[in-house]
Every structure is written in C-alpha cells, then in structure tokens.
Amino acid sequence: MADQAEQKYDDTKNNTPEEESPEKKSRRKLIIIAVVVLLAIGAALFYWHSTFTEDTDDAQVDGDLYQVSARVAGQVIKVYVQDNQAVKAGDPIAEIDPKDFQVALEQAQANLSSAEAAAIQANVNVPITSITSNTSINTTSSDVLGSQAAVSQSQKQVAAAQARIDQAKANAIKSDLDVERYKPLVEKDVISKQQFDAAVATAASNRAAVLEAEATLIGQQEAVRQSQQKLLQSRSTAIEASKNGPSQVKAQQARAEAALADVKQAQARVDQAKLNLSYTHVVAPTTGVINKKNVQVGMNLSVGQDLLTIVPLTDLWVTANFKETQLDRMHPGQKVTIEVDALGGRKFHGEIKQIGGATGSRLSLFPPENATGNYVKVVQRIPVRINFTNLDDENKDLALRPGFSVTPIVAVK
Image 1 (cartoon, one colour):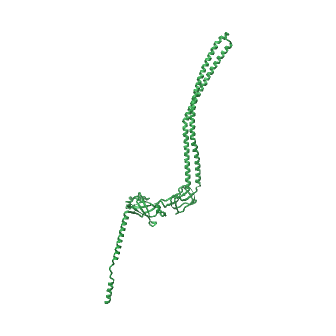
Image 2 (image 1 turned 60 degrees about the vertical axis):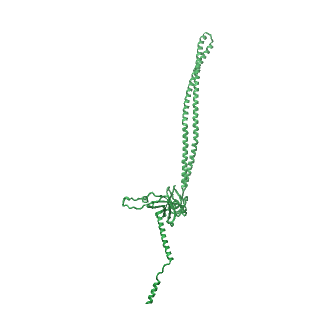
Image 3 (image 1 turned 180 degrees about the vertical axis):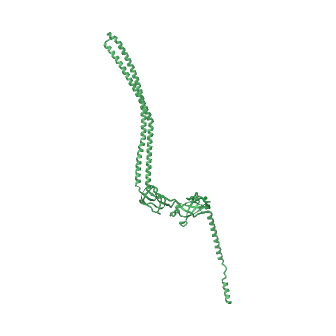
C-alpha cells in the first residue's frame, strides 16, 4: 500500500505543467498584435468604405436595343444572319428584290433629263425674249419718228397744193379776162378768130387746172389724215411695246425659274429613288448580337416591318438605382468602379453621367398614391446613369451584355 501511494505521488508530480518558454510567450504576443492590427485595418477599411464610397447591388448594364425594320416594301431574296450571331456596323443582314426600285430610278433619271432639257430651252429663251423686246421697242420708236415725218411732209404737200390752187385760180381769172377783152375785138375783126379761140381754150384749161389743184389738195389733206392716224397707231404700238416688253421678259424668266424648279423636283425624285434602291440592302446599324430574328427568304415585307433586334456590345452604360439617402454627396463626374457579377467580379471604370429626375416609383406605370391609405415611409431609389470611361480597352473581348448585374462603387470624396 505504501508503494502504491508513493507511485501515485510520483505520477502526480510528473503531470504538473511546466512553465512556458520565452519563445512561446513572444509568439503569442505577435499573434495577438497581428490580430489587433488586422482588426484595426478592417475597421479602418470599413470606415473608409462607408465614409468615402457609396455602392449598390441594384444596378445593371444598360444599352439601346436597335430594332431593325424594313424601310421599303418588297420580297426578301437573301438573308445573311442567324440568331445570336455577332455582327459589326455595316455588315449585310438581308436583301430585298431591287428590280422594281431600279426601274423607278431609271424612270426618275429620264424625267430629270427631260426637265433639264426644258430648263435649258427656257433659259435660252430669256435673252432671246429680251432682245426681241428691245428690238420691238426700238422699231416702234422709229415708226413713230417716221410717222411724224410723214405727217409733216403731208402737211407741206397740202400747203403746196393750196399754193397751186391759188396760182391756177389767178391764171383762170386772167384767161377769163382775156376772153372778155378779145370778144369785142374779134367781133370787129381787130384780132383773128384763131387768137380768140386760143384765149377761150386757155381760159378753159386754166379753169380745169383750178379743179385739178383743188382735187390734189383734197388728196393731200387725206394723206395728212392717214399720216396722223398712222402716227397715233405707231405711238400706241410703241407704248404697248414699252409696257409689254419688260413683262414678257419677266414672264420668260419666270418660266425659266419654274423649269429650274422642275429640275430640282426631278433631282429630288432621283435622289429618293436612289435611297429606296439602297434600302433594299439592309445592313447592321451598330455592332452587336442578333436576337429575335424574324425574317426569311421569300417573305413579302411592308414598310416598317420588324426584321430583328441587335443587342449592342459597345455603346453601353450602367443604370444604378441608389437609395435617396446615398445621393447627398453624389454628383456627375465622380469616378466609379464597376464590378460585373457574370464575369467573376471583373472590374471596369466609369463616371457618373447624370442623376435621374425622379424616383423609380414615380416613373412607374402606376405610381403610388400615398393619400389613399395608410402611409408608411419607404426609402426611395433614384436611377443614376454611369458611363464607362475606357470601355474599348477594358471590353476588347466584348464580354459585357445589357442586363448584366453589376455593383458600382462611387468615390464620393
């Protein structure tokens, strides 16, 4: 029994813990210090993150979806794309039968040629009309001067005829007096019968000369009247030419301008026909991926009919719905780090472009009416647009897609 007690005492003595070495104590202190430092760093990072940044997980990549539609009606003869196929801007999508549009273009070009010929003719007629008008004015002016000279000449001829009448009357009076004087002499045979007959014949001739001179005077007076009438007609023609000449030139100029307008209209129809012909070749308006393809060979398309949708891969941005309590220090131009969930947290860089003008609830189809029931205050969210600042370099593989969930982190200080 004494041996067992002694053995038990020795075992208890051997199980007593030994004092720790200084190395173990130093290692324990370092661990404690490291944990304290890490906690301090974590607290500092948490403080920095909560103080100098704002983030939200209610955000997604956004972009304009391009609805490609037919701009002309016709039958599809070729289709170059399939669903989910990547295309670049300008790549062919489909072909519409161009024959009808080629015929329309040829008809429009023929009409343009006809209009151009008519315009050339109208423009050539402008100087011709001007020259003709000036010539008419000059001619009528010369006719007036000629008529005035004819009137003056006729008046002089009337005066000369009147003088001849006076002369013929004087001769007739003298010859009549000679006959009266010769009559008693021939009766007394003082003169011969022959001399008396000659005096009688001379008297008759002079009376006939008076009648002839009077008839000539009447004719000259009629000539004066005709000359004066012609002068009035010439003056009227000159006035008409002077008034109508510029009007005729203006009318021809108006016809020339109308012809030029017809040329422009015909050119516009040619341009429209060319556009319509070009619309038969449907191309991608932007770089992206084909979705909702709804066009097949043989389809008869109408204007505005949807063919497919192109989801863009380059012109993208982020729409982030921040809480209204996060917007106090947020403004356009601030830098943003964007983490994309679908790409394993891959980071992109951007900046705030604009802050929405109203909350999402107010912009919804049926905005809430708080006055209709019990009101419970709910923190609202405001859509904020964030533009990528270096998308071409950071998205060379075109991995981003509209609709991807992202986490934008805004540096607010």
